[in-house]
Length: 233
Image (cartoon, rainbow, N blue to C red; front, side):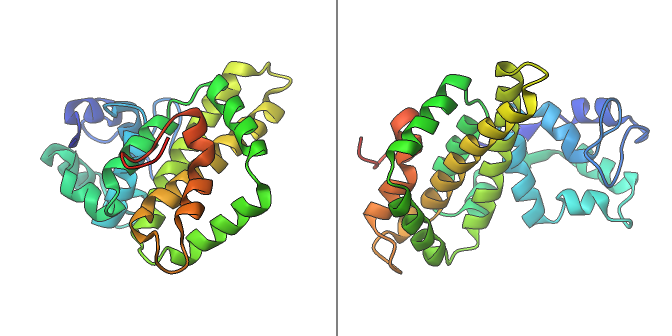
């Protein structure tokens, strides 16, 4: 499951001498930061958001790119040495359920309009008050910092997926409203599923129950399917 970025493609985007590399912004058009280039070179949708979380832990995340003490020489050296995220990196960043977190983020990144609409209906069917209580219980049980990275990656993927969906379903005049709806649904579904998945190993501890887990993942499982091999149908 190692995620490897093509160094030649990244250098091609940023320039051999860093002429298109920027700091302080993702960039647009020809200009972009390191992680903006990685997004364009990711092996499959969602991988860039996983890489960003691992990079942040390893010390070469977006903050490092934007640090005034970071120059093109350091960035180029990193690229040339090879940008590869190993299974061990993913496990350290995302915790015991790292394989499922990777699958979740990748799946969120390719959500379709139909799936988001069905998730919206599934959320309406879920008991709002019970779902809120489950979120609170999961938050209390999230003693492991790995859950934060899992949430960040999943939510970043959801944000991008929602934006793409909004463009697909809306006219220019209705874009803002459609984006808000799609973004909210994808965001909520990814947030709930990632939060529950990241601490799945804590079920039965710290007040976090199987019912809480089932409620938090219900919206996702109803439309997409199980997010862990041991999940019930």
